[in-house]
Image (cartoon, rainbow, N blue to C red; front, side, top):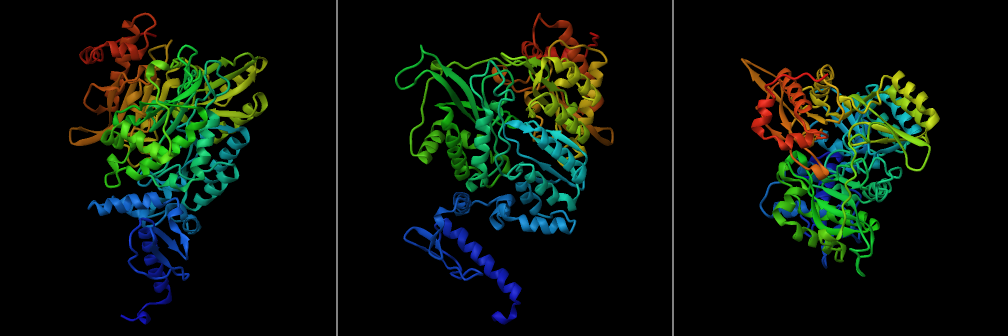
Length: 609
């Protein structure tokens, strides 16, 4: 067939396609197939171990390590999964004009573009809703009143008029129409919020200790490190070539856990005392490096034996990510997380690969030469607390299942601006903190919180209530988690009064966005067969924990309809309040009781109002 058989547009398409194929092979060190020029006349060649385009060395492009990993997978006779093929066909970071055209036309993405659009923070959530969800990036969970006010205004103009706080101390929009997608992306950037990489196969929002800088028990401030990590990611394109999503957390050892042990990379502040110090290990504050946390797969991050100075953390994280980009599974999405590389390689081999990437050895320190702080206060993220050495206080607001209206968000902004220093801090417990409130303003602020329809009561069941979006907004969820979580809280509050927190985590599916395995009480959504019908229900887990109480919740019952699950929870909580030892937490209680004893307890009736 002659060239005349193709239109000019078809010729351009074919030329661009072969050029893209040549580039992908060239950066992988493979021979060029087409030997043709690019649409603009650029020449691709390989020689002397370097790939070039128009004489420029292509091996310097950051994406090369992901392209090489894909090529090595196929060279080994393996088949790339559909998501890897989609990324190979189209770089998701270069879709801005395409998304603009789609938004202008009032259209949602189709096919693999649904997945690729997530790299920009936009999730098309059909069939649960015919709309987008947009996830932001707020490193360390900190933002300012003017940003929150702008986020609220944008929610009214282009989303559903409400905002969700996530378990990564982050914010999400929902109910975004197709024609508002780019208004959301432009609007957020104008508020200095960059959602790039907040979805898809990327490093998600970097978390830190919510009280960084205002916690008298912390060893070191961690929000600055989360911000540095955030900007490192944004400015290194190889950080976007992962086989699957990735989480990083910094914990300063203070009162509110950052849940670093549930992250792929955890940096936990520790100290080396004068007695433990030596010439090669001076006394001071370091970070213990842990790897492989993924509680949805029933695994916590484990210590590597590596101890880092604060200034070393970001560079080491970058190397860890690069090694994962090279070695992660690109054929099976279920096994494409860091945990499975570690299971296959072992920690020593993986750390050696990180050292090779960095070009230097990392500091290995035995566990008996460090002190790991344990200051966590499970009430510290809700209610009123005095800040150290000042007449200032912070208040943790209870947000029912992490949701607030745009009016409530503006009211929070007004409080932070009028009575604080303008800061608003989000937590991994789906709530927010307003710091730096003067003693004489506490009464006024409490009245304002009540007037906006929110709560500052730390003893409430709702204070420990966490729920993912559920079937109302997620196609994977089997149950309406936010609705059911509120029903659970109402049932418990009608019968019992708490003097210690109980964390109840309600997640809609196996992805465990609400981290049900680490909750005191964890629920995973299921469709349950009742007669000839399938109804919403849950699998009930008890006894999860984190940090020094680390444990995976035990599934003691077969999945059951929602009403039956609520009755079981009421019985178990009643039994705990009736039969616990003095000062015993719910976690300690459930870990002391056997499975059989907890099952028997759930069949009883208790009232402890």
